[in-house]
Amino acid sequence: MTDIANISTLDRASVLHPFTQLKDFASGKAGDPTIVTGGKGVRIQDATGRELIDGFAGLYCVNIGYGRTEVADAISRQAHQLAYYHTYAAHTTDELAILADRLVRMAPGKASKVFFGMSGSDANETQAKLVWYYNNLRGLPKKKKIISRQRGYHGCSVFSGSLTGMSFYHDHMDLPYGGVLHTGSPHYYWNAETGEDEEAFSRRRAAELNALIEREGPETVGAFIAEPVLGTGGITPPPAGYWREIQAVLRRHDVLLIADEVICGFGRTGAPFGSHLYGMEPDLVTVAKGLTSGYVPLSGAIVSEKVFKVMEDGADRVGSFSHGYTYSGHPIAAAAANAVLDICEKENLTEHARTTGAYLQRQMAAAFSQLDIVGEVRGVGMMSALEFVADRSTKARFDPSLKVAARISQAARDRGLIARAMPHGDILGFAPPLVMTEAEVDDMIAIASAAVRQVMDELARG
Ligand code: PMP
Image (tube, rainbow, N blue to C red; front, side, top):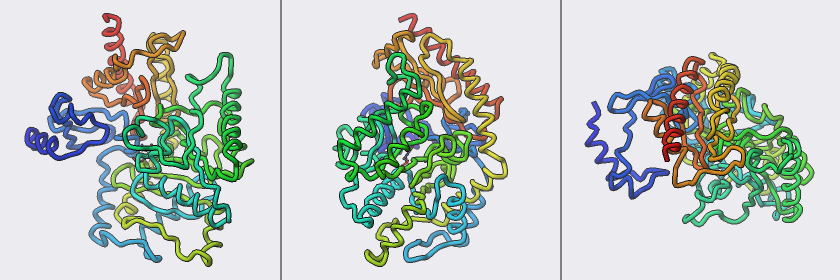
């Protein structure tokens, strides 16, 4: 049994927690840490023995659900056989070579090679360096700027954090660094002009991107990075025609497309990758999260034939590819990923996410779209969001001090469900494990409904 008081004391004294109000946590005002002790299927358990439905799959990653012993066994087997070796200078392991081959075959675009890292952030750092390397080798040393979108999320390391398009990830930390440009978010609900349909909005966003590239000079713009479905910025599927229009602009200016599939990859949208769903042909693809379902850290920067050809042709001139981590291609992570991908294949999880996801979207709309405080119900596959507004007709936002989404999230948690108050506005996000059944979707929505109604009542009472 976990000694709750002792672990809480140790944690409070020594752990620097991400995304936590440090003073409130240190003083105890924000309560004790939740000590997570176990997980099975779509549920986690805390040290008090309480079970919670994890409507966010950890951080959109535990696609196969918790407690899959096949993955634990694969990790154990590899750890017993060979816990570590590096991949520098052409060293490899069975599991890694098999995994890379699988990824190249399943990835969108014309994939050629995978560079392995440990996190989505470091994979996007690699992508930036690949863009710079590619254009240096092509003799285009000025073609280096990378464009991302407002409300895009690409990590929180120095450069990936700069790509992230939300100011609260930059403030007080001297970001963004140079060489990053941000263009408008694809969120139709907030950004469309009166009478503008989705196709027209997409054309406008593409025209803005085109104008930005022309203003900067196409010879200075190397790549555009985007999530197929905006994730942390609010779980926002693209408006109709968006990716067709954007890709036409990128091709016109010889700008690479980096598809950040960290959330969308491995079935989350109901398609193998988000790029498949929206007809994207990326030159570089970033994967993490679902690759190992979070069981161990692993990410990949997947390089297309087009980019790799330039790297290969340049090798005689520049020597070896001087980029790599101690843990690039860690054999235990590779073994875990292969076991996870086996489960995804055997259980047809992408198809399951497509059908259960369609059910999730229907039930979310039925439960919430008529409520007074819900401005938009949106999503695709196994990801969904509610956007709360004070007035549906004017889209007036709630006073931030009311903390509407945070209160609803807390009310849901008190009733046994984790649904995430997203960091940008009053948004409640859902991204459950892909293995969730329709009955579990019903349980999740019933709890979320009760939580929303509780806070609506509180707001009405003033
Ligand atoms: N890209 C996207 C689209 C993400 O959602 C995230 C994490 N939420 C990252 C990159 C960064 O991944 P990590 O937290 O593993 O560094």
